[in-house]
Image 1 (tube, rainbow, N blue to C red):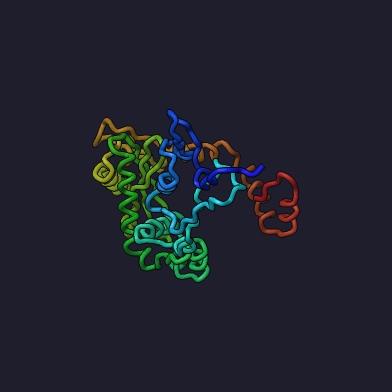
Image 2: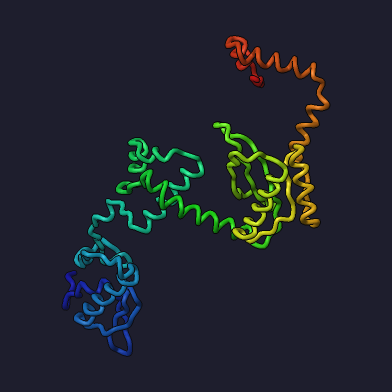
Length: 314
């Protein structure tokens, strides 16, 4: 039988018909609002409701640039899925990596710390392989030059590390560690570190030059290092440790006379090394050295030894 009467407006697909005291009202499927059942008012509400749903679903700074409304004549889509479709026009920023000045400053500092921590040559920054590697990791970013690494970045990193160290050592009791040696150029060096139970912190190193490493000279360097630790890091030196040489023994005696509350003692590792030499017979040591030299200086026996499981080549 053919349907009689006026055809139902397609806008009703977005509403539920409700009878209210003999009047026909409409309930919005999206927001459940009750409005008059006139088609014009339904269309007006539907337009406002769709815009409000889009604004709630997307932040203001990311609103779509193109809106394609749902085709109301399409009856294949159920009412609960009848929403406006959105098309976002892509932007060039989505296909490019931008590095602003703040990001560049952070990246420069991290690369500089890599060079300083690993003791890398600053000329590596000018190497084409290094530049291409950085360019692949961060397109558009230019790493610091060797002049920057040796100039402003070095001073800035030194200040940052000093500040971090001072924050970690402030108000703490520390042990001053002194040791001396000669570098690859046979230049005499005396270095100082401080230990705060958690870890060691480098304090300074002195090229002694023409000065002899006497007990008096080592004592003066230890006093200066103790004052530097207090002034720079805000810590207090309560103990001093050095190796067991004769001059360092005299140095510890001098420091004890200057400050009776100061604890001074020998290096335990150095004492164990001396103890090992004293209790090991010299004849056994000579044979061990001879065997080690044989495997070190002869290629075939050394290779055969290395091929054995769990073997250690001298």
